[in-house]
Length: 312
Length: 312
Image (cartoon, rainbow over all chains, first blue to last red; front, side, top):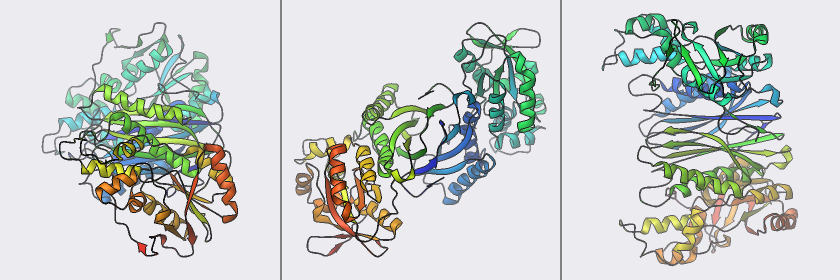
């Protein structure tokens, strides 16, 4: 960073390709401060994680973040600082510099994060539109924690008490409150031959559909293969939810979904292991057809998942 | 632009230095849709102008803009599209590509614009902290239109009728509604030897103070030398306001204020003329002292200007 906050604009040294994404979260829409469902620090962290996750999905290296805050009257300065510290803590672990931003008055707390990432050449970056029939469909990490956490919060009584939280709740809430954008994984996947990629912000059912439609193919995903995060099975048992359907429909897991030619399967697995100590779960394959996605249950029948409530 | 909206992130070819600024405007705080003081198209234009003006103040070349919209329930799609078109029309005249953004639900209309500009080397960019005693202080264009327009709107009755608008109102309202960021002027000034620069978003009295304090000097500005925009004299006569004080205290004129060694005076004047067909008004000089700014009336007495209401 050559110039940071305090002048008219920030100035940083560039690399050949500039990759940019913007993500906004608003109180009452994307999180709920008042009900105690989220703290300001978590809001800062999650807003930055969501934006950085888009860079991960391109295979870009992280660079800078710019945070535009809208602060309502009732929010005290300490809460705003906690929000920025929450974002700052994640930025520090993601090789990201918070290089500027803006602060204005607003009717509700809002956080708009612009992230700038970098790449040396086009071949380093992976878009959504390169999947081809015959490719394998993989995901990083484990799914369902954010969806299960939201289900736990919704199931709480009006008093917000935690006494009735089902087993597994602590695990899924902890995971959901500190999402980690898969930046190293994204770069490793791009380098190892993934040819289409997207991050799971809306949930696999939606996001795999985006990728499939952009590539004019159909991603056939077997629900029972989805890797479940710690606590998801317990929470779903207590709340009578199908854990694999929840893992497919819940948003904000911020894992990556990607398509790889079968010949690159091993190189992708070892690249992920080397770069991030992470595994791959192969959850399906790419078929011809332009419906985007089809989700298949254990008995082979196709499952349609309705919209899922992501707000929390 | 290699990849625009529709993938996880936008991808553009970079130049060696990346210059970024973020600017947010919120309904009820920075503009008032309901009172009819601003249209959605004007809001889009002004939000982009405000952000691009920061790039102008650095001497950067414009590149891309990313627009994060918060849309309240009552806003119809046509209004949101009008806002984006308003920004798009300005972008087209400023060699700026709208390369992405975000749209979310929000309690009030908000527009957060991130602009990315470019430069080849550090010497092309001008910060706030380079002014030195003995420098001349100049401004581009003419001042006071936005402040006078705001005064006209405040003076209207509760019915919002325009019948009582004083002479000059149409001129200042037209200027205030379509601000032009001084991008070419900023680059010309940087190339011709300006050594400190800032854009006039909060008003000269405030912004010259920012520059003066960043440079640890005092900008002595003679109010009577300030160039007044068309209509300002008439409006001020009708509303019993001092036109030069209004020109110094009113925000959102988006002209540039800059400091130049006396030896570069002619080269700055001819560079501005060549690059933008624009003139310079020399409004003061830089003195030792770290008070930032002093404003001097025609009789030599120092003038202190209170805060000015910028909301409209």
